[in-house]
Length: 147
Image (cartoon, rainbow, N blue to C red; front, side, top):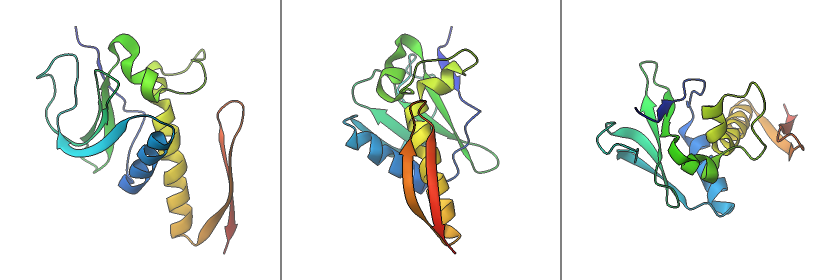
């Protein structure tokens, strides 16, 4: 029985935003590194092939790989066994009824990615970020200016 999950609810299209998200995790003290063309560590050693990008998590038995899709996007793949990944990069709020457990396990990373992707998109359209706040429910609020 595999513990490996492909999280298709997430589509990574902005590598710069992913790199920025990883930098923010590192600034929070999470020992991680985004590497290219490696196999993610999963429960079974030969369970998965090389991924274009892998988030190596030093204090976890497992990593997060990013598999290339036909449309050019990347989707996360990870091993949920023991909650190792979730302890490192999981959502900062508790799991709520109706939440996708797999997505919750990488929620902090995905929240940072989404924020940075939105900022990059806004900047490419001539806007700038006036403020960025996270509320008690861990929702990100961006205020944009410009144009």
